Image (tube, rainbow, N blue to C red):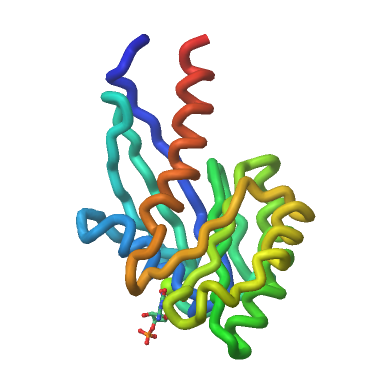
Length: 183
Ligand code: G3D
Ligand code: MG
C-alpha cells in the first residue's frame, strides 16, 4: 500500500461561546499551528499537520470566533467538513447547563449542511468538577439519541484526554479515507 499519501480534513468545532473550543484546539496543536481568521464568516481556522503510518494528514480546524449562536452561522462555515466536534462545558452554572441543552441545536444545525459526517462530543472543563460525581447516563442518552461516535471528558486547562479525544476523530477519518483511496 502507498504510504506517502496526503489527506486533507476540515473539522468543525462547535458549541456555545465560552465552553473552551479555542482552548482545546490550542492545546491539541501545542503551538505548532498556523492560525487565520475569516472576518466575513466570523470563523477562525487553525492548520495542523500530523503523520500516521507515513501518510501526511493536513488538518484544518474551524471554530467560531467570538459570539455566534447556532442560528447565525454562515453555511460556508460548515461547507465540506469531514467531521465535527461538539463541545459543552461541565461547569455547574448557566454556561454549563445551557451548553448541554444546546448540543441538540448545534447538531441540528450541522445536519442542515453536512450529511452523515462523524460527530464526537467533548465534555470539557472537567477540572472544575468532581469527576467521580459526574452523571454519565445523561451523556450516554444524548450520544445514543444523536448517534454520536463517542464522547470524551476533557480539560483544556490540564490537558486531560485532549490528545486522545482529537486523535479518535482524526483516526476515524484517516482509516475511512485511506480505505477509500486504495480501492
Ligand atoms: P470558546 O472558544 O468556546 O469560546 P475559550 O472558549 O477557549 O475561549 O474558553 C473560554 C474560557 O474558558 C477561557 O477563560 C478559557 O481559559 C477557559 N477554559 C477553556 N477550557 C477550559 C478547561 O478545560 N478548564 C478550565 N478551568 N477553563 C477552561 P478566560 O478566562 O480566558 O475567558
Ligand atoms: Mg473561541
